[in-house]
Image (cartoon, rainbow over all chains, first blue to last red; front, side, top):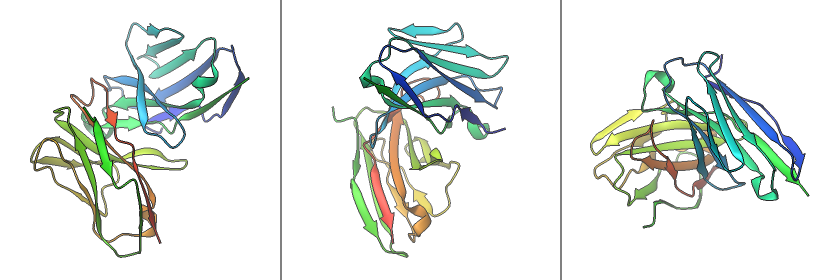
Length: 112
Length: 113
């Protein structure tokens, strides 16, 4: 099983749609989980951390299921500006809590 | 507050040449790291540092050296460039790698001919 595995995508959705991304991780000792966003030819930027109880930031909701080692990101009422690649990130890769392991990313295109 | 800066933005090398990618941060972060990003591969950790004088290998360290003489700077050295090192290189820093935001630099696009 790959350390961090994401939906391969790409996702093409109309404006206003709800879209969900899924991510699984292999290291049961991982303690920290994040979603990053990367625009085309730009650096990744933190979108949100993922907490055990789930958390919401405006139109974005992140969920964590430790038993299934599964993370999700829900985007409601999609905007054109949400078009980007979404990266699932987990710490604890390679047996070290200092290492972050990135998924390959899921490309989202929101169409007018 | 410039955040994380990287130079150069673009570089073309010939096979066998050496060069240093520069990375600096002005946020007083202890943790710094280097990643490479290739199509279909995602971001892969090359080397990281948890403080001045302390470095360790990541997932793909071969062909690269790092040093951390100051908190601010974390240069990445390519010893003898190979076409397989053609990639986009990102430097990142954070207060705590597993608990806080990783701030990335704008990247260096490297082509090795």
